[in-house]
Amino acid sequence: MIRDGRYEGQSGDLSVTLRVDADGSGVISADVFRTEGRRYLASARTAPGAKVALDDGRWPAVWQASPANKTTGSLALDSAPDGTVSATLVLDAPLNGLPARTDVIVPVEHQDDALRPLGLEIELEQGIPAPSPVVVEGIERTVDGCLRAAGFAVEEIGRQSPIPAGIAGAWDDSLLYTMLSDLMLITGDASLRGRAWELHLLLLSRAAIPGLAGIMFDADGLLQRQGAAVFTSGFTGASRDQRIIRTIVHELGHALNLAHRFERAVGRADSTSFMNYDWRYLGGGHEADYWRNFAFTFDADELAFLRHGPLTSLIPGGEPFHSVRYWADGAGGHSPYAPEIPFDGYRLALTAPEAGPVFAFGQPVFLKVTLENRTATDLQVERWVLDPKAGPLELLVRRRGAPQDETAAFTPIAQRCMAAMDAEATLTLPPGASLSNNVNLTFGSAGFTFAEPGEYDITPVLAIPGRDPAGEPVQWLVSGEPLRVRVAPPLGVAGERDAEVLGRADVGAWFALGGSDALGKAKRDLEEVRERRQAEAGTADPVVAATTRTAALDAARLSIRLTDHEFVRHDGDPERAARLLGGLGAEALRTFDPYTAQQTAALADRYRDAAER
Image (cartoon, rainbow, N blue to C red; front, side):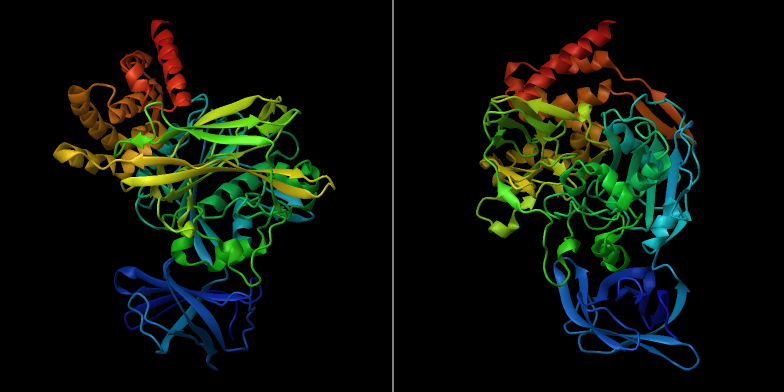
């Protein structure tokens, strides 16, 4: 009488969504709400490692109200001769208002064979066709079909607002963030600050960054795993539609909190999941093998998470990206495909601003990162190897005095996914040569990295796929020395007032994106802070210097806004950008790391030349 699918039910002041997946992941799970206002209380799933059979009746379960608030208990299902089904929920300890050691019996009704609903809005740039269905081994593959196979009932949401062809030329992070924010606020049904089973995706022509295939945003308190974009210009030939479908599902997977399979924490470069790269498969050089084995699906641990993960860990607008280790939650522990082996052929280092490693409260934390080849041979690296948004660079942050297990990897608010490793995507580092970049650690998917004054140790780590002398796959691990920085407390009444602005999520996102028209209040309020502090301390004030730099980037950038369901372009103002950066003298540039200072001076010249043309 009991079959797989999604069930809904209510008993007293409790409502339950039940998911039965005996033939798939072998899991039963539930979300529990207060009926009034549909307020979320907790999620439960049968204990990992035990595949359920529906005639068992009762199973041990794990319960979670939040990542830090968990208990154990059980789930039971009963069916009556008349076809009705009841779920019995038991917790071993009180959890978020739910009682302990009390049978909570809820009658439920089958709603859908799919386990979760998902609203999806896809907006297309004109001239960019949606991918056609692909038939592989007699099976038709579509985006909706792939999501349905993962357990989702997909429904089209929003209102179509075609994006004029070529309106942006090439799309950068700030433009994309603004576009997605506008779409959600104007055409979507979800709030930017609310959890909802809704995703918004842009299908566009070309990104400003060569090789970029897709991007997903997760900004704490703002665009939280709710928006993504895919760029189609790099997909050509007979496999174009297949690759676009895979990339779309890949980006939506990120929005549902799935990580890359090849990255160091997961360690599954042998995966043919949507969440791997073809050029990362088996350590690289096996693209044809990846596509030969690709079955338009996720791995078993990913499917179990998508179907039965706790609501807040999975739902767009919920827990921060990369905050859930679902790949290590099952029985038997986590066994990476390739072992990590320390490699001293590279030197990896962080450099603080010339003014020193002490940052004013609210000052954006920019650091220079450098990778040096210390071997006697040429080394090939990804062009984006030092970009934490796209490459393998990890930045581990720990507050001084905190336990080692409280070290957290910085997760940027934009996750860039790169298309392929080709000649243009690689760089050759000769012996003794080095490569540098700047990293902005101010604000990530979990919020402000340095939200409290104090001392922090920041350690750079690189995991580079390769092979040992026997030809076996390995991850070469390169770790730099920790850099200690200090964040000073706010100074005086004015400093406390500024801290109220500088500590807002929209302000953090504005700095992280290099400005955005979608964050107009942040821009206006920061301008007031900048003008007051500049009048008092000049442009050498580190908050003034950083705000001025970001305001110049924002001013120079073209803007595209969705107004009355039409996209309107406004060109940038390089003259204002040049004027802003021209006011930053040598003392102001000392508040940046050497790489950012050099790039800022170069931008001032570029904007001045553009303004004079």
